[in-house]
Image (cartoon, rainbow, N blue to C red; front, side, top):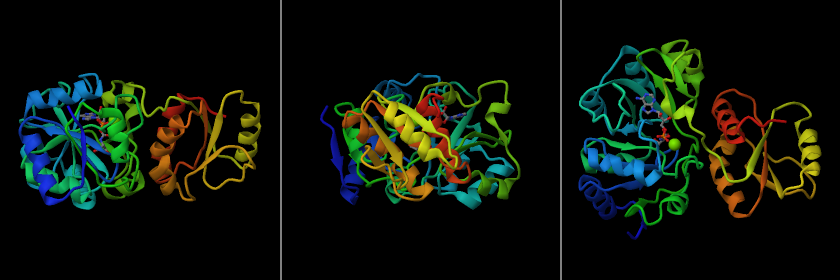
Length: 323
Ligand code: TXA
Ligand code: MG
C-alpha cells in the first residue's frame, strides 16, 4: 500500500473520511500527538490498528469525538466528567467512563472507555466528516516515541496505511492527561495540567495508589528512542553533573538542554520554557536517533504544571536511569 501525506483541505478531509468509513486507517494530527484512527464502531477496522502498530490487544484505545452528543452515545457521564468536559474540552484531556455500545476490541475487554475531544481543527473536521467516533492510539510503532509531525508517522507506518493528514507539528507535544472519572483517579499525566483539573473536581488519587493496573498501557515500555536515555534530576548543580557524566561517556553522546552552555559538547536545544521542551521532546528523540547518537542526556525540570508530564515521559524513556 502506498502511503500519502495529505494537506487537510476539504477534498482531502472527505477522502480520509471515506477511507475511515470504508474500514481503513488514517493518521491525523491533534494538539497532543498524531493519532492512528479507525471507525470506533467497526470491529474489523479497529483490529487493523493493533496490527499496524504492533500493539498488544489488551491495551485499550481512546475514542475521539467532536461534540458532547457523541460522548453521551458511547458512555455514561459522571458528575466529575461533566465538570471536566465543560471546563476543558476540546483539550488535551481524556476521561475514562463506563461504556455504552463500544465494541470490546476498542476497550481491550474493559467495561470502560477513554474519551477525548481534541483541540485541533483538522481532527474535529475529520471526526465530523466521518460522523462516527474515531478511536486512535498515538500513531507510532509500539514502544517508539509518539509522533508529533506527519513525517514521524510516515517513518513508522509507511506502507501500512493509505493516508496521513498533515497538520504541522503538534502544539503540546505530549499525550493527553487521562482521568478515571468513575473513581476520580489520575491514570496518566499529560498535556492538561493536573493543578487545573483539581481546581475543578477536587483532589485526585493517582493510579499507583491502586492495587490493580487501571491503565493497561502503563505496564508497557514507552516513549524510548534507540539511544540510551539518561535523565539528570533537576538541582542547582545539574549542569555540572551533566558535563562530568558526558565527559566520562564512551558513547556518541548528546545533551538535550534548555539553553545551557556546554562548550563544544553536542547539544540539542529545546528552547527555554518547559512547554517548549515538551513540544520538542519526541522530535528531539527521533532526530537524535537519526543522527546516530548512542546516549542522550536529558536535563530534568521541576515537576509543576506541564513539567510533571514531561518528567514522567523522561523517566520512562530513561527506564529509571538518572544522574
Ligand atoms: O493525546 C493522546 O491521548 C493521544 C492522541 C492521539 O489522542 N492518544 C494516545 O493514545 O496517547 P495511546 O493509545 O497511545 O494511549 C492511551 C492510553 C493507554 O495507556 C491506554 O491503556 C489508556 O490510555 N486507556 C485507554 N482506554 C482506557 C480505559 N478504558 N481505561 C484505562 N486506560 C485506558
Ligand atoms: Mg501511545
